[in-house]
Image 1: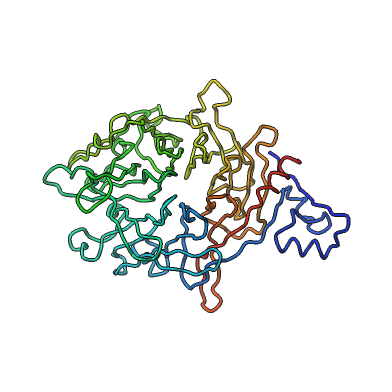
Image 2: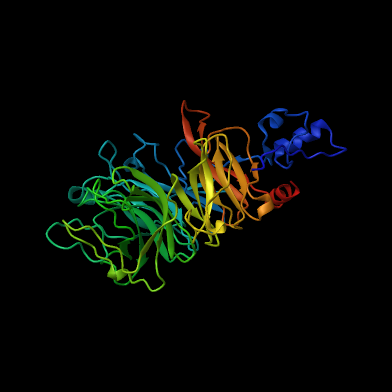
Length: 473
């Protein structure tokens, strides 16, 4: 991996000019005499100044979702942790902020009840890739609490709200926990979470926790808009992976699926992390999988189940295991062209690094081109991996800083360039649709209150300069 110091030298540049340009974010790196720690750390730098765009006295959680609006002008977020505790049950509002002005707008703030038992709970918001609407978790409305109970991970559904601030809400998936007969066609019996649109906006992926049969762990699913959806709802629900009951799996069987994301634009493949029983029948392994959805899938062939029967996926879904020998983790991410999957694996020192693998690849593939490759070589664990839309770069967080790593042509593959170098504990990294801006959260002290709030920052990305540095080296 190439992680070496890069110095932009200018014959007529004074030290004062160098410092000024560096602080304004337009210079590649410092002269050798300015920051000698760059040499010792061995980092290649392209430093830019970030901008704090939220300032109000509340939390602004991006939650590592698809938070940018289609044109990159806004970011959506939730306010978890502002009231009472960090439980999503006490998250009160879904909001957006204008990147250019910092103006915050409440998109949805329903009546609520606060406490250890709270409702409704609204959180984990993502923007539709084309339309002006956002999708997010919604627990029981207050008028439903007597019947449904309070918010839990097994008591929530997805909704969309108009992103213009008009408060127009659509309920996506129906929840039906009756025990007297079959679950209503197209409904589920628990809670959906981390709703993610395909890049063409036609399908929504999610994680799912069943209420009626809680001896089953978390799994993943998808939903599609349909005129046959239950009355009052817009989408049909289906799981993609039917796990074995907890503790009852045979060797090679999945007991849990999570940390999932779409691989391709159309939603024909969803990658995820699976907990799978090892061949010895005792231990468990954590591996990368894909759920492959055929072009002609008929979601109406999914089985909704009943009080004693767990739901079944639609006919034709194929589950394929990609990694076998080493630990894999996520959230996994598909490249914009749908050809590769980024995920986390361990290096030989036990440090979590970014890996990529072709979407049709495997660590058992005889062709080396189809096998996973380690991308980063950080000294500390990587987190929050995201793709640049051009498919040749991935971004990740390492020791609180943002790092861009090249995953294109062979001679520069694995070149890592630090975009920040201050270890400010950044989280929830997201990339704008055009790839020219990053956004993330930093816990920031409030100027007038004795507390720190999760605020949103944006960082410009100079892709031309990144490519020049990468290929010059």
